[in-house]
Every structure is written in structure tokens, then in C-alpha cells.
Amino acid sequence: MVTEPRSSAPHDPDSLIDLGTSSVVRVKVASEPWEFEQIHRLNYRTFVEELPQHQANASGVLVDPFDRENTYIIAVGGKQLLGMIAVRGRRPFSLDRKLGNLDTYLPPGRRICEFRLLAVEKPNRAGRLLQQLIAGVWRHCERSGYDLAIMSGTTRQLKLYRHLGFVPFGPLVGDTGAQFQPMMLTLEAAQQVVRKLVPVQTATAARRRTLNLLPGPVAVRPEVQDALREPAASHRSPAFAAEFASVQSILRRMTGAPHVQLLLGSGTLANDAVAGQLSAAASRGLILSNGEFGERLADHASRFGLACEVMRSPWGCPLDADAIDRRLAGTSRPAWLWFVHLETSTGVLNDLAAVERLCARRGVEVCVDAISSLGNVPVDLGGVRFATAVSGKGLGAFPGVAMVFHQRPIDSRAGGRLPRYIDLALYERDQVVPFTHSSNLVAALHVALQRDDWDDRFRLLSARTRWLRDELRRRGLTVVGPDTHPAPGIVTIELPPAVRSIEVAAALDQDGFELAANSSYLLERNWIQISLMAAPPRHELRAAVDALCRVAC
Image (cartoon, rainbow, N blue to C red):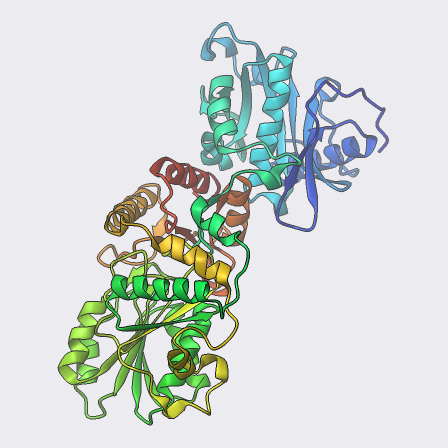
């Protein structure tokens, strides 16, 4: 179909939206012939095939009766139309014909326009595209002097429209099977909802402020960033040796562990180092698992050929102390037990002290993955044989420094057959590091550790996590794990089957909130996570919850 060229209405420059795919989407005023052709075809698919509001025809095209009076705000990717809204300011509106005495329902003294033909292609209905269309429409409305918009909202999407600030008025209109609710949106509501919660994306979007709600890497304080920028120093220099020793001293005081070794790497490397040490003895062990990272401990053990049993609890459930005690009291008592303190995947805090008591009664040594707990909750490692942690989570530094705490000197029997990099005996022998290390990462960690408000941080994280769990449930979302064992600093949310977690995360990223959803275990379960490890303020958390509910509720 060929459409006559039109002159574009005055409007702001195109808004560029990165949807997290290989394409860039523009929100603009329709002006090109191919755009109008696709508008009429999307109009047909939406209001003839999907919503039976008009009669079918052989052309697959539906031209709106007010087409020449409409200004179409559209979202396009390349030369493909993804969504549209029509704005019209001339009376009578379509609602004038459907609803008698329209003005009696509306606030007086307003300059009114009508939003019509709201349609988004099905693959792009995750939420963010519609939000950006509404934002683009209101930029146009403000320039045109409108301060009130009315629309007929499909009854299938009323909750979404309310999230965007629309208020219903009057009775339903339309025929059975295609009913619509008259709704209005004031300029004041649009400014509050659209501008505050749906930031306008521009070509400079990459430079916008994003709230880091990831479990790692976490947001770091400015002074920690400054330390990372210092010139690099040799890992053999006296200055590095002194700073390295100071970091070890602080970590020992913080945890009560007699020894700690710092490796250049991740938590996975630290757990490999522990598995290597456990492989030195021929003793049997027991691994407790109630989430993804418990399963990873089992994988570490398998790769090192450790003789052990894995005792599994359902994901999201706390460890069963009675079941553990019965297992430890059995005839084949393990020599060691290995488990995760704070199970990041589910947001469950396992009871380290209770496990230690059970093991002490039976003469079983405890090993613990404290990767997500250190810096987020008080952690006492004084009675633990091995423990692991990292720099880039609760401690608030950059990722890259792996920690292995140990109760007594390293057993040298494993020396010579372990890979050199995870042979902790070499680290203990050299007192500093036997291999190249990063002075910048150590310096940043040193600064991050030098704070005297750890107890205040622990109380704040605990209280804020309880508030967030309560608020999410109040909004109708499902929080993983019971409130009896909440993990301060991490909340896992199970989304409804009809809502894809990866799309929700992408939509929230567009709103300036970075949440975890891309890990395979999250994708498999349609889960999304909010991390509070960077201690975000309450009002920013509330804004993130508002954005989440706008897309997922």
C-alpha cells in the first residue's frame, strides 16, 4: 500500500533505546511511507485478528478513520515497526462517540488529547517498549501543550495501564469480546510516573546512572576506586609486602581465623584450593547442598576425586539439623563436612554455628564456603578447618582476590602433586605470595576493609532485607526461601510462568536497575535476584520494586 508523504509534527529528536539485543530501537514520530504502511498492517493484526473490533478483509490492512488527523509515535528497529500509539487532539474523539457526556468525567480546564491504536508486536510486549512509547508520547504532548490524555484501554491490560499512571473512569465501552475501559492520564501523573520511573533513553544512555543490585561485582565506594587507580607495584616490593600483611591481619581479626592466604582469582579458585587440600588425606567427607553453590562444592569434590557423600535438601529450604545429626551419628562417620554458609542462589542463610556444634560433638571438621556471607553477616571462622571468601561481594572491593582461611598450618603432604597455583603450602612458606599478584586489587581491598562500622552495616543489611522481602510479598511477588533463614544482602524472586525473567531484567536495566537473571540456574527456574550488598538507600530500593512490579506483576 502506498501512502502519501506527510509532514512531521514538531517533536524532540529521536530517542535511542538499547533493548539488550543486537539492534537499536528508535522512538520517533512517524514520517516515512514505509512506516505508515506498517502502521496500517499492525493496526489490522491488533484490532481485527487479535481484538475483534473490526471486520476482516483480504488486504490485511486497516486504515484508521482519523488517520489524517493522527500523529503516530512509533518504535522501530531498523525498518521494522515494533509498536505504536496515535495521538489526536481534534474533537469529537472516538470516546465522544462511545461514551455520552464525556466531559462530565474529566477534570475541567484541561487541554485534552486522545491516545488511540496502542499496539505492540507480540515479541516486544515484555514491558519496556510500551514504557518508552508512553515516554515518547508525553514528550510530544508537552511540546503540543496537552495536559490530559484519554484512551480506551483493553480490559486485558488494565493493571499495566494503572502502573503507567492511567486512571479508569466511566463504564466499559465496546462489544462483548472487545471491551475497553475509558482511562485518563494527567500531565502531573505522567511526570511522576513516566519521567521518574521510566527514564527517557537517549544516545547518551550508556552514561546514565545505574543502580547496581547485583550480587557481584558490587558497587564500590569512591575511595576504593581511587586505590585501584594507583600505579602498580611489584609483588616483591617491601611496600606491597607490608600492605598484603595488613590485609591478612585485618581479615584474621574480622573472622577469628588463625591463617588466611590470598590468591589472585575468584571464589571458584579458592574452593579448588580447599578441594586440593582435602584430597591430601584419604578420609571420607560429607557435602551439604541446598542450592546451586552447594552443588558446585559437590562438583569441586568430584573433580578432585574426593571420597564423599552429598546430602541434599530442596532448594530454598534451610539445612535440616536433625537429619545432619543422624547422618553424623551413623556408622560411617565422615571426617569432614563442607557446606555453603550463605546460599546465594536462593537467598537462604544456613546456620554455621549450629553445623559447627553438631560436628564438634562428633569430631567432624568443618569446611565452609563463606563467599557471600563475609562482609554481609558476622562470620566467625575460628573453629573452621577451611573457609573461602572473595573481595568482590560483601567486603565491597573489586573482584579478583580469592581468600582461603585455615585453622592450622597447611598439610604439606599434598605438595608436589597439586597444581602449583593452588598449593597453599607455597603461599604459607613464602609468607606473602609465591606468584605474581595485583598490587592494585590488594590496595583496593585494603581500603575497603578499613571501616569501623561493620556492625552497623550488618544491622542495616538485615533490616533492609527483611523490608524488601515483606514489600515484594505485599506486591504479590513470590520470594524464594522462608523468613526464618533470610540471607542478608540477597533476595531471590520466582516470577510467574507467563513472565520471562531475562526480559524483566532487560526492562529493568533500561530503567536504570541492574539485577541478576543471566546465570543458568536463574534462567532455568525463571528467577531474578535483587542484591543489597552495596547497601542501596531505601528510596532507591522502592523505586526498583516499583519498576519490577510495573513489568512483572
